[in-house]
Length: 89
Image: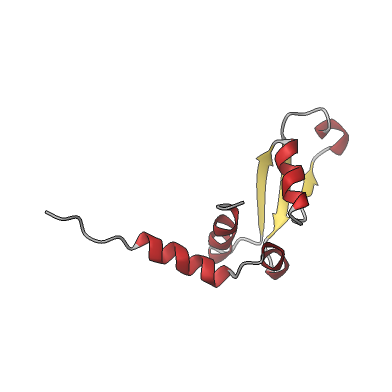
């Protein structure tokens, strides 16, 4: 889950209100255990036999509350990390 909050904060900064992804059923279960409200896309009965499932998640304040992260702080961390010093000659 280390990278996930940063990806969601960046998506939100570009105006995303929902993120769609394809994951294994095990990863979907893991995300749900972390309290994320994943929405299955497509036929749920067929997905029980599938090796991958398509899910969506709403990008809103409730998501960041469940992640216990502030989206502005996440973006700030990305910006600070991206400001690398000039290489020495």
